Structures are given as structure tokens and as C-alpha cells.
Length: 141
Image (cartoon, rainbow, N blue to C red; front, side, top):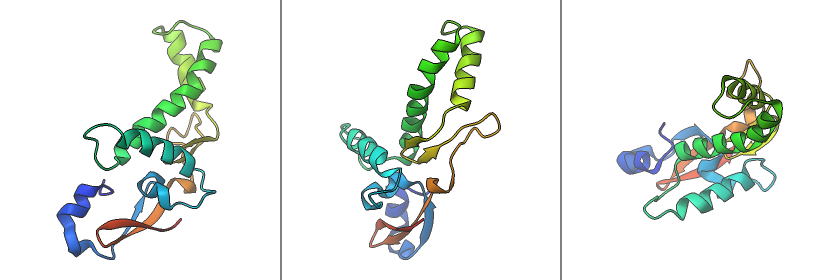
């Protein structure tokens, strides 16, 4: 929960050189071009930071964005499986569709959901950053 600019502000120069594992969206601009989270993160950052008063990006908002991407993928499949929205049948279809989501590239990595894995993220979901001069510096994966 420390990967935000308030942490940098409160910690100040005492944080210089600190290493922090974080979600890729925190350092989206610094990610290698082939990182699977770079393009979705840049879309999110552009839209989020255009909101008046939003300020710096929010990794928490990025998780919500990722949830919306999972729903955009799953809802059409759930509708085909049956049941009207709001019914127990549709809720089951939606759960099954979400659990069947594969290779969803998002701000925090690539989601591959299953009945036993409701997080769905693999090693690409975290990067290492170092605090340098009051900013987040991408170090690698």
C-alpha cells in the first residue's frame, strides 16, 4: 500500500534508495516496450490523470480498471451461457466466465483466472522500483 505519492511526500529524503515491489502501472512510462502491462497501463494513466483533481496515478484505481477489463471480457461470454442479468443463473455464468478469463493484458500484468485462482496474476504482475530523488525508478522485474 505504499506505492503512492503520499508515501513519497511523507517519507521525504529518508526514503532515498529504498526498494519497493510494485505493480507495473506505477512506472508505466519506464517499462520496456514489450512488457505486457505497458500499453494497457498507458491507456489507464492517460484517462485517469485527465480527471480533474485526480493528481498522480492511483494503483488502487488501476486495480478497479483491471476489474473492468475482466468484466468486459467475461460479460459477453456469460450472456451467451444463459440467464438474465440479476438472476442466480446469470451470476453463475458470470462467475464461470470470469474464472475462464485468459491472457487479459491489464495495468497490473496478465490475468489468467481459474476456479482455484481468483487473483490470476503471474510473475509479470510485479516490478521492482527504487525511490530516487523523490520519484519511482523502474529497476526491473
